[in-house]
Length: 141
Image (cartoon, rainbow, N blue to C red):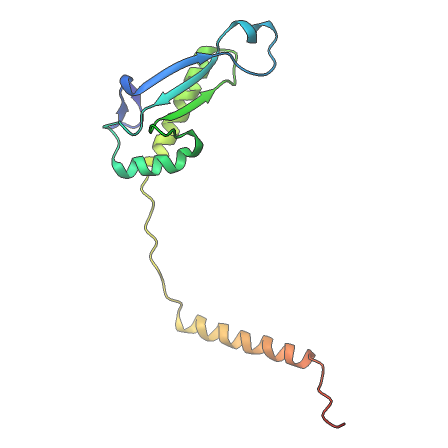
């Protein structure tokens, strides 16, 4: 079980982990030990998430969301397999917690009468300044 919040926990059948060799420098260790973790969460099939949360999760996951509806998180920062496993699980929990937050609905507001009047006065002042700067017409020729 992976506990996301006090009321939400992800079942073990929804998660699968595979361990692969890390990329980059690391000497002989990088060629021998599979420390990188690839955590796969079957988000689309999860009964614990609401459809709205799944939609937000898909948007937040971006490229990590597969065509099958799974989220794939990779962790290969440390040389320890256990630490990389914990990092991947922490990232998944953070991603799900972010998706569970319902965004506030924006309420359209109307500008006050005074603010509209101040804006129009400022526009007239600016227009007058620019009119004075303009080159005069040659009407007397």
